[in-house]
Amino acid sequence: MLRVENLYVSYGHIDALKGVSLQVPEGAVVSIIGSNGAGKTTLLNAISGLVNPIKGSIQFHEKSLPKEPNRIVRLGIVQVPEGRKIFPGLTVKENLVMGGYTVSSRRVLNERIEKMFQLFPRLRERKDQQGGTLSGGEQQMLAICRGLMADPKVLLLDEPSLGLAPLLVNEIFQLILKIRSMGVTILLVEQNARKALSICDFAYVLETGSVTFQGTGEELLCNEQISEAYLGKTIQECEDPEDAMSQKSKKRG
Image (tube, rainbow, N blue to C red; front, side, top):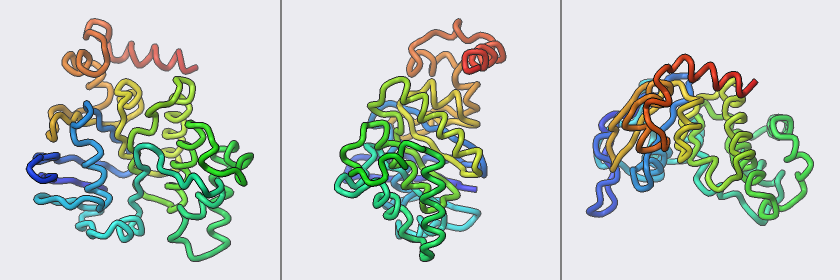
């Protein structure tokens, strides 16, 4: 569905991405993990048209993406940026209206707003409240729902759990899975590597602008180097992937 091939991005003399290639199949959750400065946000910004690659290609349904961000949104690729970046002076409902700027029909716009309120009922309770007065978790939910207002085929999520309490982190990841069940493909950049790998179909590890590991979430959870670098545990704790996944299912139940 979405394919990145040999992508290079530079900021002056700094090489942010160095030959990155990845694929995002339709209907999948694909996670990207890596340390700060690895190039994760730059990759999403390149896909969204916010930075210009110096080399490489980005294809959507086997066609090159346009360079203009508004045209990329209209094709169905929408980014929810790191740090939420909602409009703090606008109400919750007005933020959602802004997210649906591509919608010309008032009826369709209202239907999408209602869908967002069903997805996250707390937003309905706060629909007339200014976005800047919401809690951090509520602002993140609003940012995600604002992105969904454009009816994306691919949702790019940049650090959705950043700065949130553990209970809210769980809520965010449950919402991500719910969005996937709605038929939206998701490319997730996330600093909580364990969570990101536990919900994804496939994952990539970025280090200093290059892909160093790739595989299913389960495979990377049980990779010794990744475990030590990003998960804070040793491989002995995850010798049996099937047993580990079983234990996770029991805990969720």
